[in-house]
Amino acid sequence: MSSLKELIDSIKVQQASADSSFVSYDKDSGTIIKIESRRPLETNHSVLSVETDTVLPILEGKKSISDYIVIYDLSTKQITLKEKYYEDNYNSASLFMHQFPKTKSNSNSHYVFDEIYEGVDINIWLKADSYPKGSFVFYNNNVYKLLQDNAENQEFNLTDAVIFVENVKLTSISTFDHDISLETNIPIYEGIHIDVWYKELSHKAGQHIWHKGTVYRLKKDQKENTNFKKSNTEVVVEDVILFEDENNMLKFDDPKIKGDKFLSFNRLYIKDDYKIDHNNTHDEIYFYSNNNVIQLSDEVIQVINISTKELFSLDKDKLNISNIDTVNNGEKILVGKKLYIVHTNKEIDLLIIQNNLTRRWEVSINPTTKAFLRTSGYSTNDTAYFSVTAKYDPNILYESLTIPIQDLISHDEVIIKFNDKLDYESLEPSLYTTKYFENYAHEVIK
View 1 (cartoon, rainbow, N blue to C red):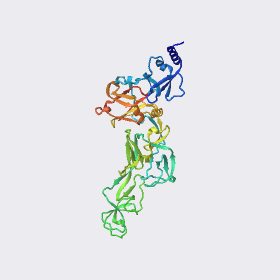
View 2 (view 1 turned 90 degrees about the vertical axis):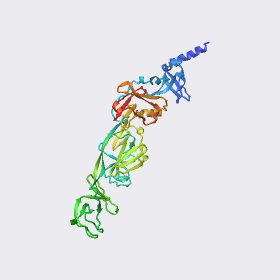
View 3 (view 1 turned 60 degrees about the horizontal axis):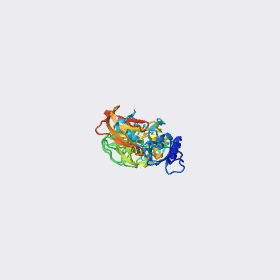
View 4 (view 1 turned 135 degrees about the horizontal axis):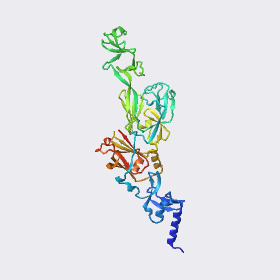
């Protein structure tokens, strides 16, 4: 009869000779419950299949179950069995030997954007704005081409528009560098008050009046209930549109093209273009609505009229802004005034942006990696460590950055302010880290 020890040794040999072993573990903590040569049919625990060689030290009694843990390995992107404190062996600054490659300043490196319909500018449709016939407008997640002029405070009419592109999203992605031209109204003949001519009223010498598209200056007084006398006037400016007046009974018209002159509440203006050069600072999001700039900031949407300098706010839900992480590959998005097809750039796992304009580090992980981690139920107390050093020299440490991995999964990005005593723009630092992920990038916004 064999001894108990011989029986146990025999079981261990049989298990060790199998190609695969099955590790039952607690999903939340990663703690190993038991190791078997066959996959358990019924279990309340998660099960991981590993090569038997991986658990051989445990089976041979050289290591204890408590010496190992099941974790999600960030470098291989899979759940795996490792010795405890494996990552802790790399937590000293002297071992931060993986250098971040520097990439071009482009705060959208987790995504690739392919512009479509080049030359087409698209405005957000707002009831408070006007749009000429032929305009392309975004309305209810579609882009339309207007078949008729759309006046201010006019409801959107589907019969006066035709679908141009369907299923377009507005997102939280920062607006790219771009130049844009918006219409604006420039005052002319400033300081001159211009009245509309009424036969029923008397007028004084030197008074400026608008009559049938022309602004005149009267030479002499003219009594009430007398006809307009061109001989008693000097022409100041011709081809002036009556646009707005306190008397709503008058017939008004809209200035439509650059160079149109118009009278608005007794003041003269000319329609012109306002040039805007937008340089991307990563966290700025702009859309446009004919004469308005639409700026997104946190939960607030502000609409700024370039011509009148007026400002009002919109509810963020009104425009249905999607988080960029929720956009699928191949979907169409509007950025600024342009349409793009968006693709996830899977080459970069973790991106650190050195934003010299806002003096902060902006850290994010690839949306594909994040989505996998969320759906796999990955949970960890691991921390990512980054070393900010002298340029190309890991031995001269400026400061260390530590970020819980769970924070990177839970948030779009993690923000860390610069050290106030350091001028990173002139220092041009390098970044080093342990190899948690496979591919890293360090971008600089100047």
